[in-house]
Image 1 (spheres, chains in turn cyan, brown, blue, red):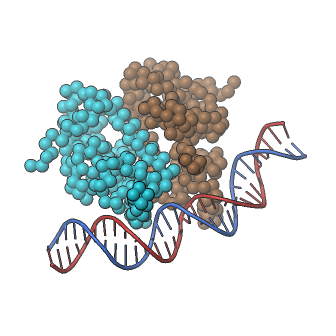
Image 2 (tube, chains in turn cyan, brown, yellow, purple; image 1 turned 90 degrees about the vertical axis):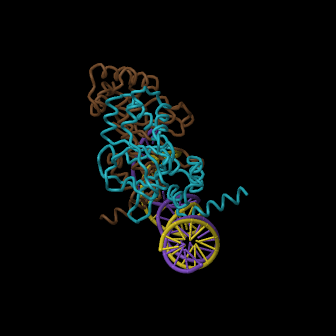
Image 3 (cartoon, helix red, strand yellow; image 1 turned 180 degrees about the horizontal axis):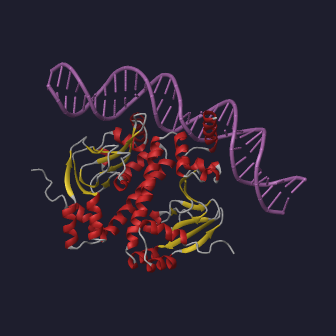
Length: 200
Length: 200
DNA sequence: CTGACATCTTAAACCAGATCAAGATGTTTT
DNA sequence: AAAACATCTTGATCTGGTTTAAGATGTCAG
């Protein structure tokens, strides 16, 4: 048997860190969030489909990315342990997603459907506040990334990536990191060489 | 007397479009949100200070921007009529702001302080939901912008600006638009020339 | 009316990062 | 263990956009 027994615990701890939950609220979380295992390279969401779940990563790593008209792709966000990932626009407006989400490693997630989330808000309004705080945090991270994208050089963006995702440096192939900082893998290779020379 | 009598109305209408408010809740909004007029070029927030208010633009236009180490600046967001603007990270974490906000025109805003907003959430939990929805919308817009920044050419980003802010094309000098799409004013001049030639 | 300053355009030289191409090393499949 | 494929590096050439500089036009305070 896989080690997906009690994958709910990290999520309860995550919520508890925002506002402590009652036993009833914990039980509600247990019934509403369903565990699911995605294998490496498997899609969580494919561009053009509706994003049906709000996903919490328990173990592994997912990426949210966009494929441009010229075939190049750009990673907007990684989500490893204890992070959330979804196409929020598609999820809330029930519109076809502009983005893809897939697994870079075998990944255990806890996911909640739109209807269950709305029901959760109704049954326990505390989750309105929890998800408000969650969205605030998500927004802040994204605003920082936006600021970095417009004002940093490629080298600075690589260093920012190392700060934001210290765990992922050794877990991801550099083509993924390049797609995140917005350069070609060839150029990232040069950046790394330059940094190694300056620090060695 | 200036026409800032009853500037509260657009805000009440904005909230009402999310969830309809009771008379008590409307009264609460009236007491918590304070009108304020910023003159053109006046700062709403200066980098290094704490962002103390959550701001709703009734009339006029503000911009949120970052000054880089090399002195160049980059506009992350404009806010004209019926839009929100603040440095969310500074506001929520009480940390020095990374961004500046200032007025591109004389601008009438309605603003609420951090303490008043927290009090509003306590007195009327409906605002937890309203601000959750508001943050969702803000987040979606920003995610779209992020996707455009990484995957569009300068020309495409200019066209996206025209779609996002149809009103602002004629209200803003092109140096502001250039700082938003992430090019020099000189290059924007060429883009416009190229577009005019292809459509004329 | 005039000087000072902002706004926009055009051109020439330049640069960060892309593209194309090739080879080296590692990993998976059969 | 070979074949097939992914990953990373390095070099040569090219390009989208910057920089610097200059001039044209507009606008506003005194």
